[in-house]
Image 1 (cartoon, rainbow, N blue to C red):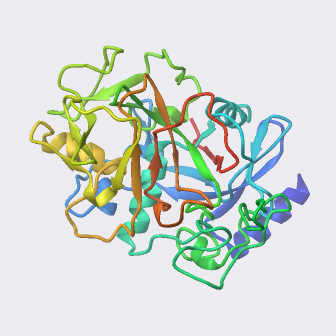
Image 2 (cartoon, rainbow, N blue to C red):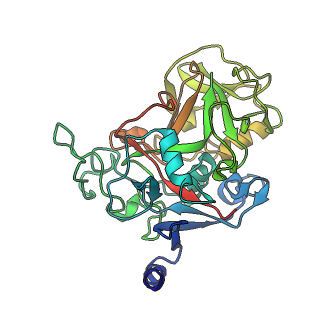
Image 3 (cartoon, rainbow, N blue to C red):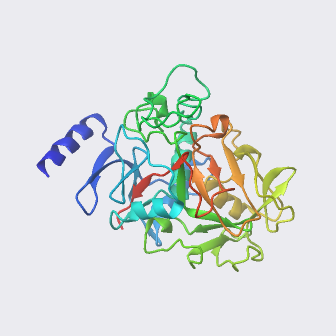
Length: 358
């Protein structure tokens, strides 16, 4: 333990906002501490309520810890370690289990946590770069990270790069103590969000951070969003709950409405082009904005970050951020929910663990 203390001291000296957290086996992960903030701290004109990422089981937490690096898996457990080839080709449930195996409070990063980071970046005027174009960022031509040993495709292109080895702009805050590779490299499985026949469903606030709140397909913890009040309500299971937020395809783009009239297994647009019809009241819009699912009216350039949906399938889960192959479709606000079944695996999707003291 004394060696870990020395390592933690050295880390704190260079990265004051970072820490080394041990799981219940005493094994380390490098984590970034995110202190609690209000919605109004990251959304101009937003409420003074605590952002949902810091509300677990109705209780405010003073901080959340996000893996500094995309995770690897050792002995069935997730770890945040520098210079590793990120885990990939594993299902949503497998990734989540690797996080929860670490002990109480450990979990797969959730949608409200992704939103908290993305909104912080937006508020501070910087959306991080990353490996979203075969080893480099689509907006650059020179700066690259170290290719993973198995990160070369059949055409000789770099796919995955070693975690945290890119330039400083690949950090969420453009600093050495930031969260790395949250844009690109491997897209990241995301907890606490899904669609059911196009009905948007989440676990309320950040309840997905507690592994005692199940996320199985039939779990009662999944909630729909009331389109008038923005409250979380019990869905009817068929995606047709009266008066809840659903994703329809209108003019080939996603639109939030209370009914689905045009079904499609894949439709998308940049987040700034996602709209709401008149059935979605301001309270529900505020929830969607806080969860990173709708742009605010600030006129901010989201740099092409895209939301993908499927409103035909019985269930679609999500992964976030985009991968090495997504180019202009990648980014910290990106979310992909069109082919992501519980059985889906691909070399371009991995995950990231987080921690909350329960």
